Length: 404
Image (tube, rainbow, N blue to C red; front, side):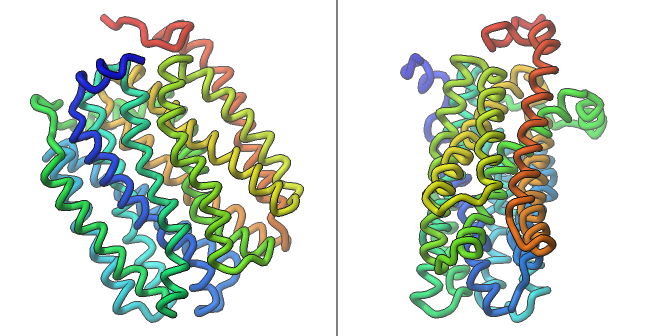
């Protein structure tokens, strides 16, 4: 890759701002994931209730992402991101000072979705500055902000135990959000001559396209799988292997690191090898690893397997968004919002599968086996559709054909 060409082709301060905004927002979005272990003890939650608690922020992110996506079209990604960060203070402040019941926790969980909706501003903000040949890397760098999950899994339970109060974590989280808001406001810049705001008919037209729904499914597997596991792994390591909240968070962080920092690698490799080849390979590996996970192996082997799964899912995120701009170059803002929302739905469903089947069967085995089946379905689907894709809008090597 021509690094000089990449940096000259776009706007580096904006790319960094998109990454930073995404990173801190992701940290806030998954806050309840590791804390759920401690909160479960305080509120005596069963497996299904704990799964609801960690899944609801993802659902909220999916819903609010469409709202922020519309705002991004109307007023620009930069202003939309600023609004998103301001609104993020509401659930953080409420969680810090006022929450007293499980119902209130559920409401806070949904409202935390505004942090997850940051995709709708961060990704278009970065994407609009870069040409098609650098989309995979640019989106991978901006999307690597999901590394904020690592900070949450490593430090949330440590802070809660140090202060003896998990609500303090919500209060302290407002500090990096404020600092990010300042940096973002100073550095980020909307691209001049942005695309004109889209109409409702534009959304309807995109939703009529079969490929839109195919990308939604793929991203619900890659990103949804990453987010879902990120929020649930602390609970899994705690329940399955009896680790205390801090150690469970540490083991979860090991796995989350893989998915976070390999996203840019996935985008870069997709630029070089083609997004189709990458996704077929990655989905296949995820299918095999999750099948092994369904046997509930030893802690060491489970950590290795989940590390590989998260690495592949992270790389898959970059690979999906290497393909999306090629297929929908003129509707990238709309499709990014729709596909991103679908990814959030996947992240909502995954904890529900693991948590509810754990409550029903007393084991995580069935849940992991079902997840491996979903990955297998993704392999079959992309193997089928790639034949038509290569004939219509993508070349054999994975590069976009010249459009008239």
